[in-house]
Image (cartoon, rainbow, N blue to C red):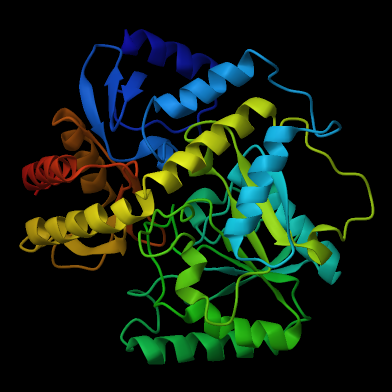
Amino acid sequence: MSGELYDRHRRVMPDWLALYYDDPLEITHGEGRHVWDAEGRRYLDFFGGILTTMTAHALPEVTKAVSEQAGRIIHSSTLYLNRPMVELAERVAQLSGIPDARVFFTTSGTEANDTALLLATTYRRSNTVLAMRNSYHGRSFSAVGITGNRGWSPTSLSPLQTLYVHGGVRTRGPYAALGDADFIAACVEDLRDLLGHTRAPAALIAEPIQGVGGFTSPPDGLYAAFREVLDAHGILWIADEVQTGWGRTGEHFWGWQAHGSNGPPDIVTFAKGIGNGMSIGGVVARAEIMNCLDANSISTFGGTQVTMAAGLANLSYLLEHDLQGNARRVGGLLIERLRAVTAQDPGVREVRGRGLMIGVELTRPGTDRADPDRAAAVLAAARAGGLLVGKGGGHDTSALRVAPPLSLTVAEAEEGAAILDSALRSTR
């Protein structure tokens, strides 16, 4: 069955639309932290549709809200008042930490970042943007133009002038050998020097933890230190929270809060987990920034009633069941378990992350070079053992990406770690 579907897929889909595994998997349904394929095999899901199924598969509270809303009206566009959209915007604005916040809903993280770039460049009257090396911000023309990861950047053409800053990857690059304080100081000096060679940029866009890049991050406080330099030049800070938002890191509700000593970002973008699989993205910004556009701008599908109903139900469940706290507790156990089982593996360079956002970086034994072949082999071996994980990396890195739904139990964390341990052992 999957072979026949794969043949059909190849005949009508673009060659660059990647699939995991030599024998691709068709997922037909899910429940809790598990999914099933077309042959009826069950898997523990440690990737959640690329960090999108945030709470649980087939969460009753969300499916009920979607069903009830679909029975009333699914869509009317932003040209009409929309109660679920206003209600979710009120909650997101309050949670964002941004004063006098305004919220605009989109259909994806890519579109959210596009909107943030439109706002920043219009507000600042500049098309120069600072971005982080190894970053990923989406697949649209403008988002590709600020993506600092070669594997996800198919063109050098861009409407933006992008300058890349050090600091998103702690354990590689020219400052890797420095202690945390000196690492931050060196990155800040690099930023100061860069700004001396260019016209004032519109904004710095940064993921607090780089997702596609392999769950890498700087020391806490880097972006707060950057903020002092940015503020001196009037440059905005955009936090791309598409993967880090909603409590996934455990310690904070937003990833930027690990760098919040100088206040919240000017703009926050979000998507993925808030919809628990429904297509929701969005932007939060101060009113003066959000309102800077002097032409019409709407969203046909952003903020539709059915997706907003899903987002409201999902966010309520997340907060009422303290899934941020669960991510901190169970994620802490999982990361320590993975560090223990990989301690004697010469091909595991680092186990990193926080909460339920964990990266396992693989290298060729005896070197510091990426081992993408082993990453693919571990993915396949984990699948054979009943576990789905992701992969990522950039600039000669390869990493397994572990990001289960935030309702993961201790028993499921132990089970997943054991399967991943077996997969790593079988591929040495």
